[in-house]
Length: 402
Image (cartoon, rainbow, N blue to C red; front, side, top):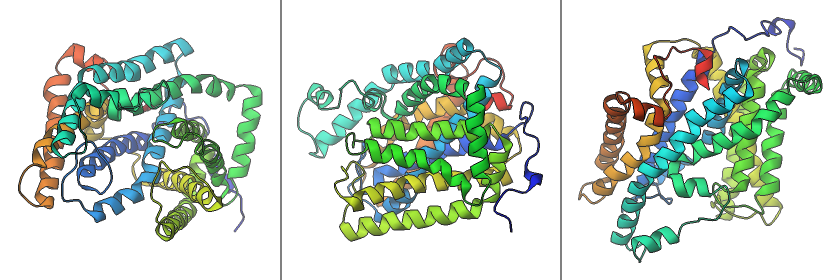
């Protein structure tokens, strides 16, 4: 078999009127995945805002598998949505739309919901002797330095919205550049390389380089290493969705992405087990550490590409569930973690086993979060705008994946 994509793949390069419903589905499913990750983090063996006394290694292992590619997938999908957002908008219109959909929900959510999370986390840590001090002292102990970590300090889980807003602003001149003559030449070269078997792995280079350059200097979670690392996925999402040949290569080479993604994950896991190092905020100090971070980044891209291939193959359809999910996605994301923290604060104090607690936290948090959206946010105009909903009845079209 030839290494290049067969000519039959080079079709329908104009996606102007093409509905890519799988981007919508992946975005909705990714949000649900984040919800499951956060709600189960109460019971893993790692740090979280609220922790159960009994913790489970199996939950930790399952989460460890999703961790390298969960947020990269999220930002890749967001980058893909940006292509549609810029397709029929001027730069000013795009900035206004990003402000309404991202910056306002981040600001409102931080002002209204973060104080609730601050309080319950502080109270829980006082009760469990994890922290000693007043509420003000607890707030003072958090990282308030003026860098990228401030988004997680102020907004908790809503750091994603803060990052995405900045990515949208930083990406605007980059994406406009790729529409210039010279930018089109670069895209042509990327497409030519990617058409070879495993050529899509060229998109793994930027995440690997970003992680290896910045991790030694900014090792903390949500620090600049994470910022620029995730920015590369945002840009890749835009580029991949902009040309059907790239999407068809991802669809064709799914088994390569799956294979390399699995091997890179196992390689990083073997290094972690053999060295006893599991700290994602570690500073790489030797060649083995750099290899681990390189495998981490490679795993992130490969699994992202594989999940995209699944979407392309099986999820390119629309129904009422997708439309509802698209309407609910931002408000549900904003409210879900405060709800998890509120419910788990009480549940972890109950004298019952771990599994019933897990079920109660997951189901209770989901039902309360979706109820807050459906019966409160959706029905109050000012809240629907404040929580990032688009005005008017939403029809699921490519423009709405942004």
